[in-house]
Image (cartoon, rainbow, N blue to C red):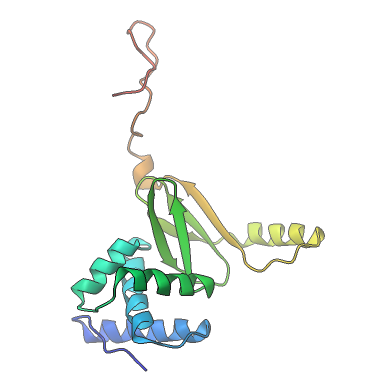
Length: 178
């Protein structure tokens, strides 16, 4: 059953609804209202900022008047991750970011500073790794690469706690900034 679009722009909402329905059909999931609303929000946030945390999804859904609890968001996201429709990226001291999987096998660049996620085509590397796994007799079920580092915007800024330039004439040179 199609969801009632809840975005102010009916044309954009209809496009998100159709995309959500197509994703659910591809991963053989029944199109419940919860799944459709969550995918519509994730599609919108993914297009705007390259993924979303559970908190961001919850706020987005609340702004759109969709009544979905946080535990329900976690449950639906877990189903979609298991169905390979959504990828989950967890960093050590940052919220987990969920990203729409746009292809069967994806490679993501994840910024450790701002948690931005960017998709990357690394098909040549993927083929070499699959061939190496096959040579070992390993049967591959899924391939997902996550490359962690800093995006170009964060790399342009100095790191927090970066070392001072070494100037032998200055006391404390080379120690982290406070």
